[in-house]
Image (cartoon, rainbow, N blue to C red; front, top):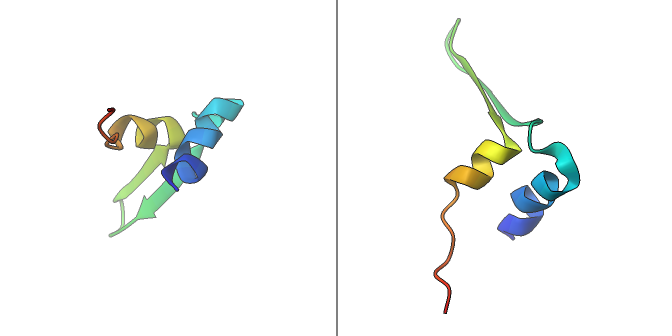
Length: 47
């Protein structure tokens, strides 16, 4: 499932596009790209 949510976007060359844009209190906003999400996502152990 994670592949469909993140990896395919990075592989298609869209890693620099914003995946999540958060806006909280005034002045508090964050943007996370697909590449950043992929980097932060844990990978299952390989066998």
